[in-house]
Amino acid sequence: MNKSDFILILILSTVIFIFYLFLNDKKSYAYVYYENNLIKKIDLKKDDIYKVNGYNGEVIIEVKDNKLRVKKENSSLHLCSKQGFVNNIPIVCLPNKIVIDFNNNEYDVVV
Amino acid sequence: MDVKKISKISMLLSISVVLSLIESIIPIVGIIPGIKLGLANIVVLYILYTMTLKDALYVSILRVILVGILRTGLFNITFLFSLSGALFSLIFMFLFKKITKLSIVGISIIGSIFHSIGQIIVAIILLSNINIIYYLPVLLFSSIITGIVIGLCTNNLIKLKNN
Image (cartoon, rainbow over all chains, first blue to last red; front, side):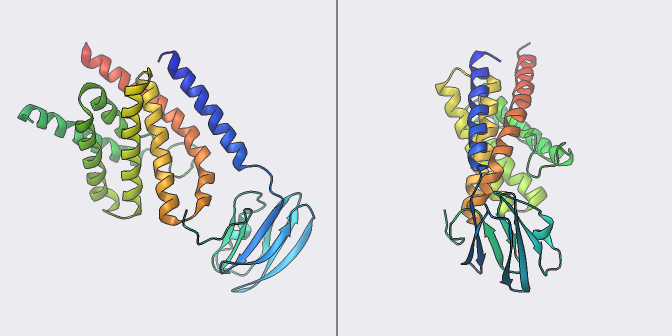
């Protein structure tokens, strides 16, 4: 290993760390989609409980301390409610055809 | 190509295939899916430093195809991930080796970093979901560490060969 290797490691670590912080910045709104259509915009600053209609019935969403979780929903594996409180990673609930995203983008866009 | 070179390349190819297979047995601590050591990169790096880019390309592509046949199957999504990762990492390792003064460890880090980036780009395109990008920082951090390990291994290998 020579000097340029250490510089490379240093630069890469910094860039990745900034990138990580950039991806994890606090979001202020969450967007709820049902079958790719926006059905609700949730303000994350207010602690509240919201109800939306999914494919298998009601989906209850809880907002607390700038974070959000699916409190109750009707599905076989309960994956989205097991995910717990999140702030940046989207929650996808396939059985209910519900997607909760923190960026306002349409889902079927090819990047 | 003379017979000696063909047999050398095929020997190296078989080593890299075996290393890929061994790697799939080793569980990595941390239990983050998708993270692996990249042992096969030792062979590719070795070829890049002792032979030509063309030979490294042969071994890299043939390895992906052979491991595909042996483990995951051809032309499915896993195969495409491996192929894109292997090509991306090889091309950028070659470029950085030409342009910069990095030692073998640095080149190895570049290789593993671009392996991850290549895979993520293909994953975003194939699954048409930008949110996979949240996975990238974790993957890149581990890439630096595995890159250092693989680089040191290759460094020792080349030293042994020269003695």
